[in-house]
Length: 371
Figure 1 (cartoon, rainbow, N blue to C red):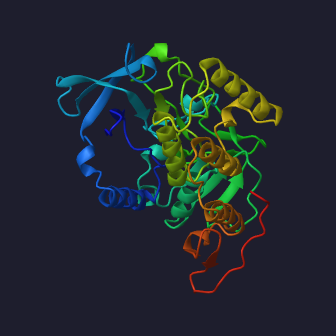
Figure 2: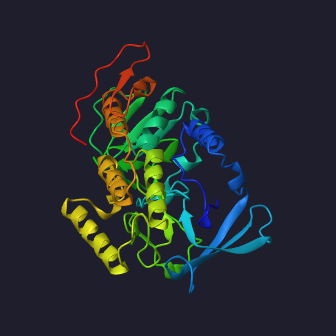
Figure 3: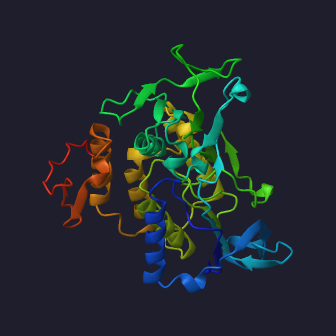
């Protein structure tokens, strides 16, 4: 995708592969219709290499040589030069499989939520589902509808809401025994037909030149100023790597901030100042007890982050209803995971909204901490 800055993006940010995929696709298609984007998207193209080039002229004395090839005939490749690059390949591509001793001894079907398409293929089977994030909960509910027997194995606080029929909870799987039996943290065991991982994804940027210095370790992409750009190459922007966020409003704010950087509305600090900012931010998060692998998991902190980018970039922050709806939906999900998706929300203005159940009855809004 190109704009007046000569920028190429390497794809749309992706959302988790789950049952709402068709709705997400419909939203993106309508977005492209509304903003007349179709003519600016080059489909069927693979980005093979993104290389920084030092130039005398150009933004920050940097340019980028981007090599792409035809998605069908890889022998057809071209190299083009751009002023800036936005990497938007998301983080739902390369499945993460945790290290579990003896996993190779499991005799049933191993699969990751990345490969899950429908519950019918697992109808009537016994399933140990590892991970209780949104994808894990969605899949557990779907499997319940096809009479699967599901053990939802996870390391979070036990769910206190009613669970779907045929679904029970267990602590994490810690090892696989010689005969293929799964053993949980509490010593209990199970030998399911299917061991299904809902354990997230690895970050991967195989097209980025190594000298850019973007590293991935323990589910952290670094060093990135404001979780977006490497200080040494500030015309490269990696969009959408934060987790546990409200996706499209979050991407919108990041994109607006990037525009403010490119058009000069936000004058970037020096490389040294950006590196110091990253160092202090990481130290503050670790001081609050945030493990490295959870640093990109913003959750309720996303709203302060979004507002911070808006303040720096000098543009309007998100309307307040976004944070209220997101945080309220979390409360409804924790109370009733079986029915929370049937709630209908109506936004009246930037601050006021209402929620109704499937029967059209207005529900009281949850009492939220100040976000």
